[in-house]
Image (tube, rainbow, N blue to C red; front, side, top):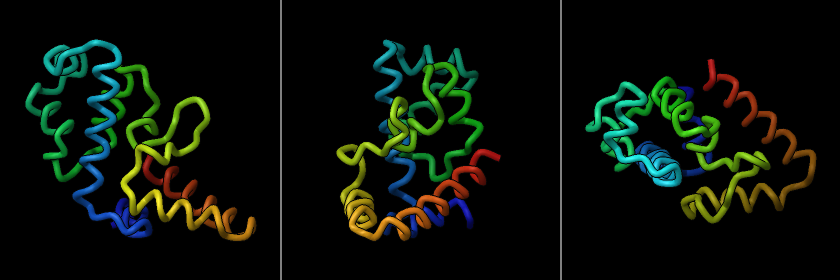
Length: 130
């Protein structure tokens, strides 16, 4: 239940989440020039699992899968959730419109409200990484 709080806050459905994660997995895999089969062999996951992740066909994306993939592809786990590695900022152009709109609305709030929301999001990420 807790893992879906962020999705609900940004008016995303649970089905949007695996699709976005899959997009970033495929992008990172292609950046390093690996095939699905090669990624499969290096992570110990089946090629079908890699394909399902990339195509958003897995309804549940477990953190341990993301961690295994992130190690092989040389990315932080946050990358697969749409957070830029170097800056730690969310790349708005890569987000679904509803999430991008929500972030835009947050940016229009007073600084104190933005900080409250930021603290909530930090706590959610800490919970996710446990």
